[in-house]
Length: 165
Ligand code: HEM
Image 1 (cartoon, rainbow, N blue to C red):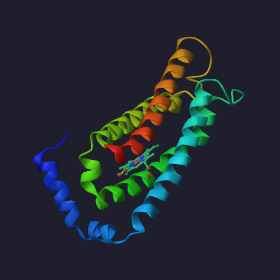
Image 2 (cartoon, rainbow, N blue to C red):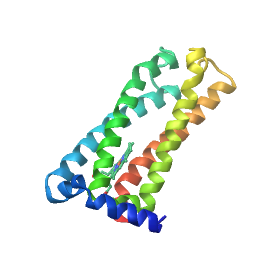
Image 3 (cartoon, helix red, strand yellow):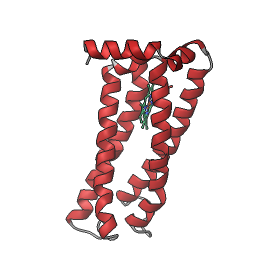
Image 4 (cartoon, rainbow, N blue to C red):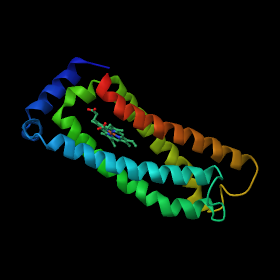
């Protein structure tokens, strides 16, 4: 999606002192990309562990609430690092990402997976055994974890793909 106001916004960002500094400092983009990639490793490792537990593949001797409480902080603390490093990459070259449909798709998927994660975590605050046990809830949480994993993997692919569109 490309609009006149988005063009103007990108042109304004390019003129800011922060953007100008990033544009003339050769090491800044690779340094920020490295931080972004390290944060991706942390979040994807946590997401994989959590979702494998939701699928009942690993750690079944611990409740979903227990595993979730251990892993969730890594996800929530890594997201701000991804946000800040991602915003710095945008500020350095706004048109490359903000006007890129793959970047827009990546942000949509990111918001969707955050909402999905908050939605299945919410019942655990009232009842820590909510997702444990068999029956319909067990199928629901497995389906949620498959959608969640698919979204996270698609977000990584989209992040890399931005450079080629
Ligand atoms: C939180 C908000 C985020 C923002 C604003 C953001 C923004 C960006 C930007 C602007 C780029 C540079 C794209 C380019 O110019 O080629 C990028 C790269 C990338 N992002 Fe993000 N991102 C965010 C979160 C994430 C998340 C959660 C993941 C995956 C778990 C992710 C995965 C990637 C990948 C794999 C790359 C390519 C890195 C490379 O090849 O150097 N990003 N991101």
